[in-house]
Image (cartoon, rainbow, N blue to C red; front, side):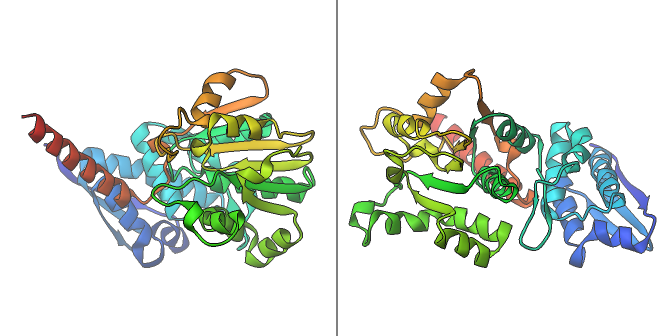
Amino acid sequence: MSQIINREFPLESPEQLQSIVGNQDKFLTILEEGFNVEISQRANSIIVKGPEEHVQAAQDVILVLVKLIKRHIQIGPSDIASAITMQKKGTLEYFTELYSDTLINDARNRPVRVKNIGQRQYIQSIKKNEITFGIGPAGTGKTYLAVVMAISSLKKGDVDRIIITRPAVEAGESLGFLPGDLKEKVDPYLRPIYDAMDAIIGSEQSSRLLERGIVEVAPLAYMRGRTLDNAFIILDEAQNTTPAQMKMFLTRLGFNSRMLINGDISQIDLPKGSKQSGLIQARRILEGVKSIGMVTFTHDDVVRHPLVGLIVDAYERDEKRREQKKDA
């Protein structure tokens, strides 16, 4: 068993201490839960208590956070969660590099930056390629970053409009039995898109862009027969496209346009009888094609509170125990 130790980290000022501690010690709580240590403060110092290797891990994260604070970068809970994840993956040395570029300032004038290496690869692919596939689990920031890059391109004048779409397929709910036209039916399922837009440019500007048709949010069926020039086009929930729908969408690409295709192949909700997800087929067919980027996110790229990770781990351990009992 590792020796329990106390280690003190003196900080340069009360302001620096407050930046690390957070309101009501919120940031310290995240660090405690992330590394299973106890953290307290005394004067301008932070004291970490726990097994030596846990304390060392917490120290590594505290030191990189201090580097950001010295650069006058305001940190938040998601920054700390990302640093914890990267420390556990052995990639913490790259953490401060993620803060070199600001993608855009959000509605509250806060800088939006990538949170991990997976997100950085995604952004680099979007900048480099005309079409980018972002494939991976929920919580990796695919949809949010797609909207960020779309809004950024619109503000710079690189495109004239933004088009955001998704297939109208939902698990356990038949859209055919819901009231209203197709767009009205699918709108509630596009809520994450609207939430991202509101966070980035504010609800008023978001509404104005939608009313003027500069931003169009529509079901995938509305894309048929169109050629989309001078546009930033996002297909979300692409795992629920059929091969025919995916081919139809990809061939809508016009001149001076960018396409993003996001999806999670572990959450396919296609009706029974569908042979294959269009996203899976497209990944197989288009891998290696020039000007098409493929970025795969993993569960390590999920940006979440460390306690959520512990909860997920606990459920997974319980499921494994149950399976072992069945096999016994």
